[in-house]
Image (cartoon, rainbow, N blue to C red):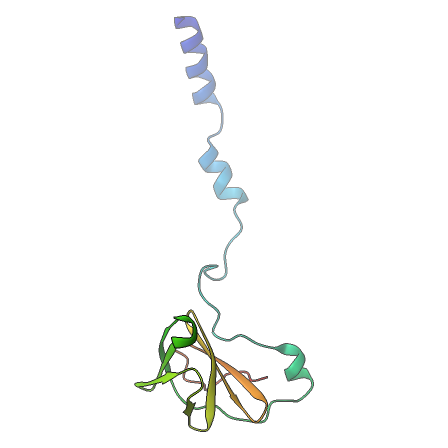
Length: 120
């Protein structure tokens, strides 16, 4: 029994550790994979030149509750179907709100002031 323990101890000390291997094989991350994206982009619509409207406002928070969902834009609570600066609130998601105006839909993300929003 002691012979087996001694052999295992020698093998453990003599072999390279998993930590050393993990450091050499792990890819370097450029961003946090758990961060939500700043924008949800419909690239097909943007490529077709359908971007015509300009959004202004800061989405501060969202409350997802089915048909009773709310979006807080510049301190104003907006329910689905209500208008804000000429845009109608269409959908509310976790941290996102989609507004529509004249066939153009804009998805805004919490904390984004709309300065570089993409529209579709």
